[in-house]
View: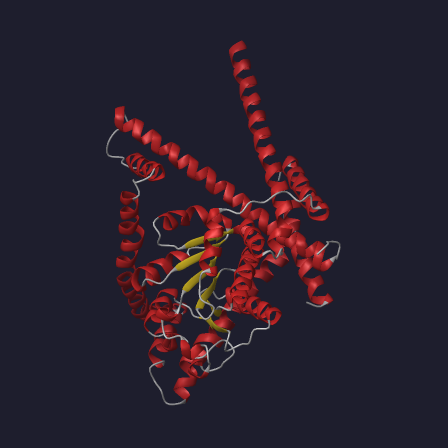
Length: 272
Length: 199
């Protein structure tokens, strides 16, 4: 590994640490996409049910954790019921911990105001199965209670009882939600994504196959701003902006250096 | 998390980041631990959430439908025994055949037909026209049976510019994503572990 690359890592680290300690408070505007998801959830009736699927790996938690937290907080604040599940095994415990923590903070009761279904492999059959009979796919919830005996669990039979599905994802799972749940059962799907996935899902948003997208740490910060409740997303935005500015400067500097090098090589070739 | 858990997590984070200074035994240890834990965790979650409640417990009550997928799953494991590996093809044939049957119409509708309809119907605005031109120009770039010369070549070049914009945007979002992961770890190290961050 080259010495210059190590210097770049070191400078990025120093800038990130300095921005997190001193917090310069860079301004943040709310994007149309994030506001749309916020308005969508805000427009739901207080008694409606939102399904949140944690379709991500543990390594993506720093990015999707703040997003999931903001959305769960918004749902609980509105009195919306939450049905959690995971179609990625690594998202199972992370999703349960997240909703459980926010439910405790909001004073919400398990079984009546939220439930967690747990993990099912083979996402295709799980998504399709829930469209027919949710009880056939999940007869018991993550805590082992019978779904039929749970006040909230007994209320939901299929997607007709779900106002919105939100896939908290770091990969291609929202595509499968679109293919098997939206296209077949006409349920509204929104995606809370890692930033790296945004360009893959914009076409689905443009075609209205996805109802909304909120993405990355920036999306979390915007959502927290709309909730007037700064959290992990807002705390990270100063460092994110500072590092982006640094990387932009490094890219420009790298291009100038490459251009000068090429120019001097061309000049030497002409002289010879 | 208590102090022991926080310190263990912090040391493992530092072990992974030590790779930035070069490959070393601390990084190797943390990497192997991560791989092992991920496999173990997936195995336990699958046993606890699927095999036990969906197959074993119903069979204990005399309900046998869970036996069929359990046997088919066990057949796949026979791939590990070269002499009986052929038996795994029964399960794989079902997975591939069923999977393709379900996936092909769904993918064709959601990824091709609905996208085509949205592209065609979107020409009521400037953005819609730009999308339509981008799609057509990019498609001409991928026609390799005709030389990229003249008007066709111009269209292919425009398509290449559209793709370059897409790659640039994707790269920028990738940087944003990776920076967010770094910030998450730094917040843990400086906040939860060292306690030097304001909340």
